Picture 1 (cartoon, helix red, strand yellow):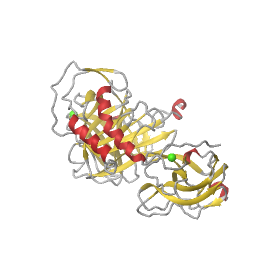
Picture 2 (spheres, protein in one colour):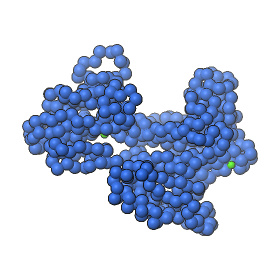
Picture 3 (cartoon, protein in one colour):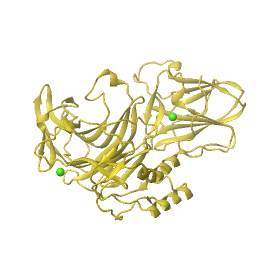
Picture 4 (cartoon, helix red, strand yellow):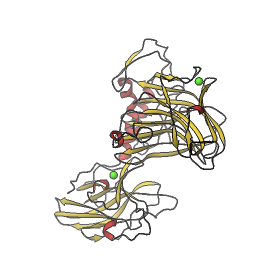
Length: 468
Ligand SMILES: [Ca+2]
Ligand SMILES: [Ca+2]
């Protein structure tokens, strides 16, 4: 079985309710007309929940969901159908200025035939060779389901996107925003060498951690430059879902991510010096839907269960020390980062030819062991199925270098590797990560367990040690 059907296609539709008043999930009141919301089929939902409970091996499979309008329980609260004669200045401002290899101009943005039109041109402006354009919402949004209908230009060297971000970094560089927690959501990005059948989606955390939360690529059957397609995402306190033409692509955990208001960006810039000389991107609409607290509590259960299934076993029958790599207090050339929805310690030395003293390549922590004994070491790190075992590192346990190299499991993403057993006395315990390859090493978590038969999987349990 590869899919669990959570939602329903062709569900019972409620009649429109023009006086619908509901409290949304962040406490504001929406009082707007709404559109044929779909009822969740409770029997289907309960079946899915039972299967998730009864078959933990199956539970990892992505939940399958289709929606002809918006996900179950969501009601439209705001939209721009781009039907007015010109851009609605109460909703939008222009993206102006340099980015990538183009200068963004208001002149490149227009409304025509019910569409937002962004023209891409090879023309000199300021000191740039290309011009693009875009619009940014004048108000921020937070949770909800967001969708655009868009027809893309698939010429080389352009970057077309529907994305969101909070203040700072892009068009607002006020220093008070510089170090604010910040998430960027990329509903779709189409760039540079992507042909007419490929787009990417993902999220980036900029602060306090930095790095990709997820980044995935979709190969479509549709020609994205010939037809309008629906790109959507659902952002909630617990999870985020990405959708393409109403089909759920992926669910990620948002509970560890910055959660703040976001501005909506519809943009096209050039990002190569030899981009195709012209093109046009069309947006048919942008819509924002919200869900009531009651509907959200029903809806979220299956997704929360699905995400929790990634944790794996949380305890052995012995003594377990779960240690997050990013909590090591002394990191030298290592850095704390966000990577694939994990907070990790990355060993990347920028000056590859520079000589580093071995101490520069260490990250170190001092712990206190309450119970002496023989402990088995497990380490969770990232590797790649293509070009594996290039990001190797070792550990030093109370001064003893592990024979094992870590970071060579050969699987795509993060996996646990066994590092041998160590007879450890009560009291001071010094752990070092040693970046032996100096090449994009990424360490998520360590486990020291007295249970020789225990094998961790998934993200494991929360940290239970104190670093000195
Ligand atoms: Ca339209
Ligand atoms: Ca971690």
